Image (tube, rainbow, N blue to C red; front, top):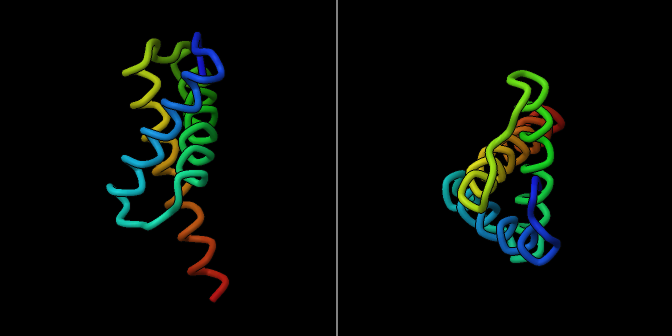
Length: 85
Protein backbone atom coordinates (compact mmCIF):
# COMPACT_ATOMS: atom_id res chain seq x y z
CA UNK A 1 0.00 0.00 0.00
CA UNK A 2 1.50 3.22 -1.19
CA UNK A 3 3.16 5.21 1.58
CA UNK A 4 1.79 3.22 4.52
CA UNK A 5 3.79 1.25 7.05
CA UNK A 6 3.18 -2.35 8.01
CA UNK A 7 0.84 -1.63 10.93
CA UNK A 8 -1.10 0.97 8.92
CA UNK A 9 -1.40 -1.48 6.03
CA UNK A 10 -2.86 -4.11 8.35
CA UNK A 11 -5.36 -1.62 9.78
CA UNK A 12 -6.35 -0.32 6.34
CA UNK A 13 -6.55 -3.88 5.01
CA UNK A 14 -8.81 -4.91 7.87
CA UNK A 15 -11.16 -1.95 7.35
CA UNK A 16 -11.24 -2.37 3.56
CA UNK A 17 -11.78 -6.14 3.85
CA UNK A 18 -14.55 -5.67 6.42
CA UNK A 19 -16.31 -3.07 4.25
CA UNK A 20 -16.03 -5.36 1.20
CA UNK A 21 -17.34 -8.29 3.24
CA UNK A 22 -20.42 -6.32 4.28
CA UNK A 23 -20.96 -4.88 0.79
CA UNK A 24 -20.69 -8.30 -0.90
CA UNK A 25 -22.84 -9.93 1.84
CA UNK A 26 -20.23 -12.51 2.86
CA UNK A 27 -19.11 -13.72 6.27
CA UNK A 28 -15.33 -13.94 6.69
CA UNK A 29 -13.15 -13.77 9.74
CA UNK A 30 -10.78 -10.96 10.71
CA UNK A 31 -7.70 -12.64 9.23
CA UNK A 32 -9.35 -13.20 5.85
CA UNK A 33 -10.63 -9.61 5.88
CA UNK A 34 -7.08 -8.34 6.43
CA UNK A 35 -5.72 -10.59 3.67
CA UNK A 36 -8.48 -9.61 1.23
CA UNK A 37 -8.05 -5.92 2.01
CA UNK A 38 -4.27 -5.96 1.53
CA UNK A 39 -4.31 -8.20 -1.55
CA UNK A 40 -7.22 -6.21 -2.96
CA UNK A 41 -5.28 -2.98 -2.49
CA UNK A 42 -2.24 -4.47 -4.21
CA UNK A 43 -4.31 -5.76 -7.15
CA UNK A 44 -6.28 -2.54 -7.61
CA UNK A 45 -3.16 -0.37 -7.17
CA UNK A 46 -1.53 -2.30 -10.03
CA UNK A 47 -4.65 -1.76 -12.15
CA UNK A 48 -4.74 1.96 -11.36
CA UNK A 49 -1.03 2.43 -12.05
CA UNK A 50 -1.27 0.48 -15.31
CA UNK A 51 -4.34 2.32 -16.59
CA UNK A 52 -3.91 5.82 -15.14
CA UNK A 53 -0.23 5.94 -14.18
CA UNK A 54 -1.08 6.86 -10.59
CA UNK A 55 -2.90 5.63 -7.51
CA UNK A 56 -4.77 7.16 -4.60
CA UNK A 57 -2.70 8.20 -1.60
CA UNK A 58 -3.29 8.41 2.11
CA UNK A 59 -5.39 6.31 4.43
CA UNK A 60 -8.77 7.12 2.89
CA UNK A 61 -7.51 6.59 -0.66
CA UNK A 62 -5.99 3.25 0.24
CA UNK A 63 -9.13 2.15 2.10
CA UNK A 64 -11.10 2.88 -1.08
CA UNK A 65 -8.54 1.07 -3.25
CA UNK A 66 -8.48 -1.90 -0.86
CA UNK A 67 -12.29 -1.99 -0.74
CA UNK A 68 -12.65 -2.05 -4.52
CA UNK A 69 -9.85 -4.59 -4.90
CA UNK A 70 -11.29 -6.84 -2.18
CA UNK A 71 -14.72 -6.68 -3.84
CA UNK A 72 -13.09 -7.71 -7.12
CA UNK A 73 -11.35 -10.65 -5.42
CA UNK A 74 -14.53 -11.77 -3.62
CA UNK A 75 -16.48 -11.54 -6.89
CA UNK A 76 -13.81 -13.46 -8.78
CA UNK A 77 -13.72 -16.19 -6.12
CA UNK A 78 -17.52 -16.46 -6.27
CA UNK A 79 -17.47 -16.77 -10.06
CA UNK A 80 -14.81 -19.48 -9.94
CA UNK A 81 -16.69 -21.37 -7.23
CA UNK A 82 -19.95 -21.14 -9.21
CA UNK A 83 -18.29 -22.36 -12.40
CA UNK A 84 -16.71 -25.34 -10.68
CA UNK A 85 -19.95 -26.57 -9.13
